[in-house]
Image 1 (tube, protein in one colour):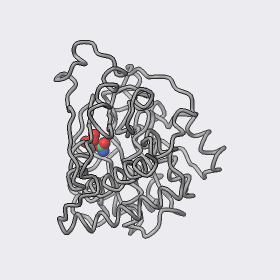
Image 2 (cartoon, helix red, strand yellow):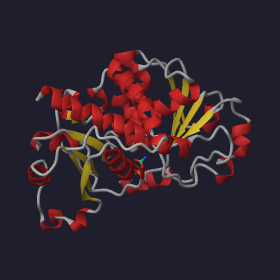
Image 3 (cartoon, helix red, strand yellow):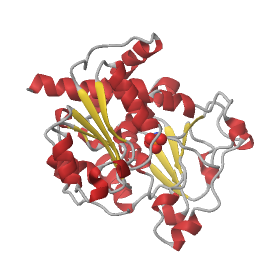
Image 4 (cartoon, protein in one colour):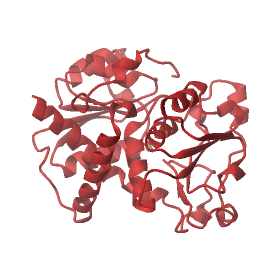
Length: 324
Ligand code: CP
């Protein structure tokens, strides 16, 4: 499936009490507050504390697409906050297989739960879910659209490693056309005043409307390149995989081969204190030989998924309770 649900820009403009369907839902101040709260949650996680903030709440995870990190870190986060979890990780085990629409599934599941976390192959599916839900909706990835909770954990990682989330030179590499993590991240990095270098095969470049939007909204300093060597001066390298499952034609498939690759030689030729990030899963674009380098923070980045999603769930559900 590579379709989309259409929506108007205003439909993503919802308060956090309604959920998080786009990174645009959040102001700079709200993101800063989530980063602070994530740090507090990280301390609880390190002490293996179990909190009871959401003891009376149920989270439904509706994953129409595969996931390891996002689904399991959301479920771990909810359980660490004392809440319950229901849902499916494979739509083939649900009535989707009998032809049930997304709208009807959401109507039903929102009567069984207090928050819905949805991953779906179609762009706009989180907005379609929001339209039909009586509980907040969190976008865990909608096709080639966005992945806003990944962005919060990416910013959290940058903040932990660089002690700041602004004024950095950040190279974002890979399939930028289809990579939803890079779409949400580019917006947030621009909001915080970073310089961006987009590196991809020309056929898989960052969509023109996103580049134009960042330029007009933030005046972001951006370079566009197809050479990975242009990442060697970056403070942060954000590598992504080719999204073969979203390739629609021969051109895309050819552009995706061969992969960009970061190996030990590349890191030695880059800035001393560069950090290498990746939303994972990785394929051949990160050589395992760099895993043990201090520059490689992608496994630490993935581990932050739990405290960051604890902070997000708490913010969404407590905002909802205070507005009730
Ligand atoms: N980063 C990320 O979204 O990973 P998963 O696909 O495993 O959830």
